Structure formats: structure tokens, C-alpha cells
Length: 380
Ligand code: UDP
View 1 (tube, helix red, strand yellow):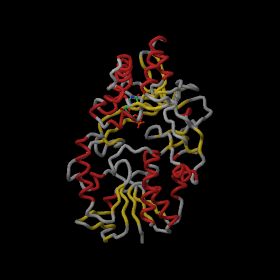
View 2 (view 1 turned 180 degrees about the vertical axis):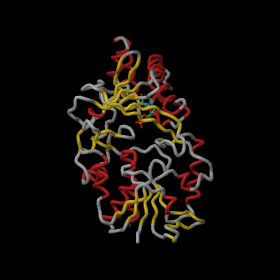
View 3 (view 1 turned 45 degrees about the vertical axis):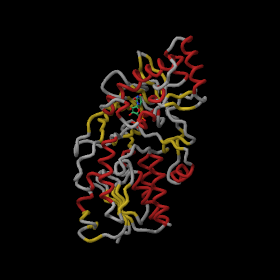
């Protein structure tokens, strides 16, 4: 009946489903445990007409023209360039920490010296990860590195991950580098925006095809079994392709141990005033229990006398209770993950894709790119 079964209706699952259904005329079944599609990109309009990203702010940014064009078939975009301020020493200053930030936090003579030294050491408009800058031997750059490390990264990372920056894969803190330039935007990719009518609408469009059937509110274990080297669907051997986008340890009953993930308690509040804060997102690296506050009407511009904000409180992932947002990227955990990948090789028709299945800190565009690549492999 179905040629491909996909577990999970987030970006990975939805893009593969759309490609197989529309390009190869395959019949595809998607099994999704939540009561909605879109994975963690899911959004909704609240009582004030404001689009809220239920699972945290999702800002689309990519340099990949193919990815951008592909999604543009399913949504119009609101041009949107995200800017973030960080609350440090009683001031809200732009991050990624850049040349503008330097002039806001240091006396002008020191700021000028640091700027000159940065421009001698690095090209203008380049990114320097904090753990890289910390290796600098120049005393002024060393001072800058210690300042940024302490004020921006150390305590935020402790809240977000329960770890020090250097205990994690360096790629994690490198996502928010020191920027040797004057661009205050959080991302500097060529294409940036949010779907004009929200992500949920875009996913509805992606999946709106007679070849795609969707089972919501269904755990994959209710209808599928991974047995020896066979995959069973409703107790019958299934020989089509299976694309799994969920947590890889759960796919195999956590037999090699539970992989750790990090969760966040996302607390939405309605505020009885027109505007709440100076930027769409403000990070609080050193104060409070939350890491950041996002005000949604600054992302999807909406007229309303009220405003809706989201405070993010990081917390450990508790299986079955909260959401596994992030894989925790350490050498030890990657070794645990590799055991599952080796085990998965016995299923010739199984494909693992996405943040949870590949245990990788993917951005949305990375997942779309991977999904398109896998589709092309299947079509070849
Ligand atoms: N980070 C930080 N301070 C900040 C912003 C980011 O220490 O003000 C570090 C932190 O470890 C975080 C990582 O950089 O987990 C990546 O940040 P990003 O904003 O990309 O995280 P996401 O939006 O994916 O949660």
C-alpha cells in the first residue's frame, strides 16, 4: 500500500514525503506522535493574532539557493533579519559581539586599540569563535576574549547545557562567534526570513498531496516493529524504505543506553502593553534562570494592544515528560550514538535523518538540504 514510511513530520520527514509524493508519485505514510505537523517549527496564532513559535524562536537563514527556492514553492516569505541584544553589566548590547558592541562596553581609547588589533589579526567581516580568540597571545585581545567569555558565554552555556563552553564540541559556541565587523544581525546568510503565514501553514502546503497520508497522535511502536533485520508494519514485513527522524536511541529500545538530550521549558506570557523589549530577542547570559526572551510581534509584525513573549528555561531532558530539543554534543555521547548507527546498518532499507536521528545540532536549512540530497539518492 505504501512505498515509503516516514516517522516524524518535522522538516526532515515533510521534505522527503513531498519529494517522493510529487516527483516519484510514491505513496507515503507519515507517522507522527504529536497532534500536529511541523516538528519544533510548529507555530500558531494566539488570541491577539500574534504568531507564536511554540517550541522556541525559529528564524530561517541560508546561503543555499536551492533550499530557499524549494521552500519558496510552499510559502511566501516575510523578509526578516534577526537581531539579538545581550543584557550585560546593566546594558543591552548587540550580539554576536562585534565592533559596535566593543564601542558600547569599553572606554573609547580601549575600544579603538582593540579594534585595531582585531583588524590586524583577522580580516574585516570575519567570524572568530570565542574558544579561538581565547588562544590569542596579545594582551588586549586576551582581555577582550576573557571579557566576552565571562559575560556572554560562560554562564549562558552553564544554564543552557549545564557545562562549560570548552567541555562541549567547539561548534556549539562557534555558532555565535565574535564578529570582526559592524553587522549587528544574528545571522549573515544571503536568504533570511520567516514564512509569511507561519511555519505551520508552510508544512500544511508541503504535505497537501493525495499520495501523502498522515497518522497523527501515533507512536511509531504502535504500528511498527524492528525485529532481527526485518521491519514490520502492522505485523507484516515492510520492504519499502523507512525514514526515521525521531530519537535514535528510542528506535532501538535504548539498548546501548539512553543518549542525553537537553530540554527547555518554554513559557509563553501575554503582556498588557503594546511593546515589551528593544529587540526581538534579548539574551540574559548572567542574570535570571532563563536564557532569553523573545517577543513574537517583532518577528511577525502584528498590530495589537498586547504582546506575546517567550521565556526559555533550560532543563534536563526527562524521557516521556518534556521535549528533547538538543543533542548534547560531547565526545562520550557521540561514541554512544555511533553504537546505534552501527546497529542500524542491519536494516538495509532504513534511513536516519534529522536532529534527533543523527544526533546533530542541525539548523533548519541543513535538514532541508540533507533531505533533498537523500531524495536525489533515492531517485537516482
Ligand atoms: N551562547 C552563549 N551566549 C549567548 C548566545 C549563545 O553562550 O548569548 C552559546 C550557548 O552555548 C548556546 C550556543 O552559543 O547554546 C549556540 O547559541 P544559539 O543562539 O545558536 O542557540 P539556539 O538558538 O540554537 O538555541
